[in-house]
Length: 167
Image: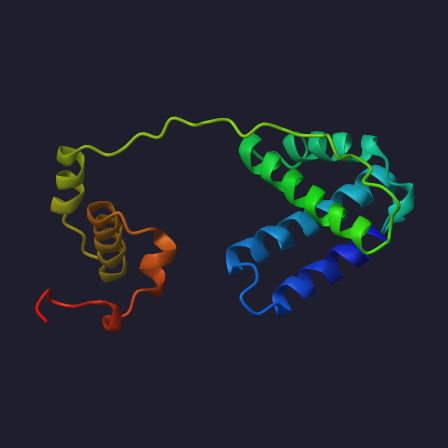
């Protein structure tokens, strides 16, 4: 069964030492939730037999992600890659004889990213904020901008990671 085995796959990945990241697990859970909603909406069932899934399933799931779920092109394409990966594991485990959609792909579109200019950053820095929590958020945002530190790295940053440059 699709959802049963998908949930088992996620649990297995959670238990792997040095396996997938928390972010990847979060994506798998999001995909699971979308699959669950899709199966209910499209098939009127709680789950689908793996052996009955054909290529039309992934095409319709793509349409669901882009249409009903209103998920962007790149996120949907990445979700499809993850689903295909899980189905490869189903083949390896003997749950199904062959991958139902091995050649189905969706492109990730290169997005042009705009950056804040120095005057824009200085205006944010000069903002007078009277709420302590918002001031902290602004400072963390600026710290990330000036250092290039990703949000997840900033979130995990502790005093132990900092040093003054002297030995």
